[in-house]
Image 1 (cartoon, helix red, strand yellow):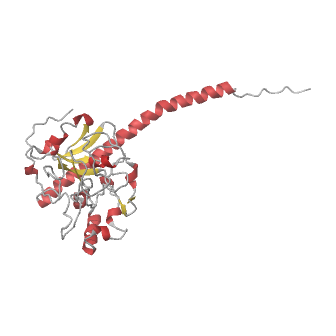
Image 2 (cartoon, one colour):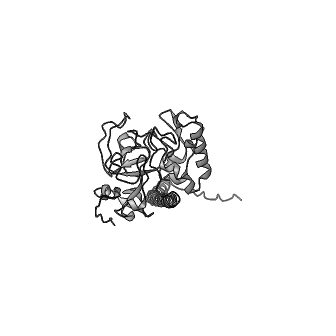
Image 3 (cartoon, one colour):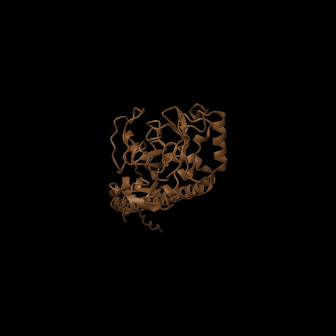
Length: 297
């Protein structure tokens, strides 16, 4: 007897197209939510790193009587151009790296003449924001130095030359010097390193003007000027979103978080300030300006 053929089941082209369209729609709805969660997580970790630094600053102050030197002068006989972040290493459980830095300076005070195998190429996670994937490794700066960079920069005040903030060249600010109040004075802010990684090293640096501007120190109203050709003529742009491709944007506070940036205050607290707070940022940056500045919600 002839056998009866079993029917073959399959999908029509229309059905396949409908399924693909549904999957694409679901993916389109899911991706923004995933990105938002990742962004929120990165912002939280970034704020936690700033809290670690705030605690470390308090411990440094308790141990030595002042906050760390913002930047050691270039012609100093001891640790020339060393950044405040390097001096903070023993207080963020990086004693071994601090000893390496001390040994490197003893071997060669001119840190820029040292070999490529050097502490400045060591990535310190507490000094990076996870929103910036570039900082997971050391990078070559202008084909000259292999360096590890930082997302955070010390607040010099309104400008690095006026020195009316917390960190500046040869500074030794005490909490009692913050007569505006430690809870009303920003001491550290976010600023991603420049596109060529020339500005934003945690270890040491000369700065655009020799005083650390753009490297480890920054004022809220800083602009161009100095010795670096890439930032000559840059105008102060205030607290606004930045652009990696523009060197001038290494001279103002901003972050990779949507809408604003994290700042650490003198009392150790960390707040996310929106770009709409740009008009009060200079007042928050001074330690003894006498301004009455209510913090935004």
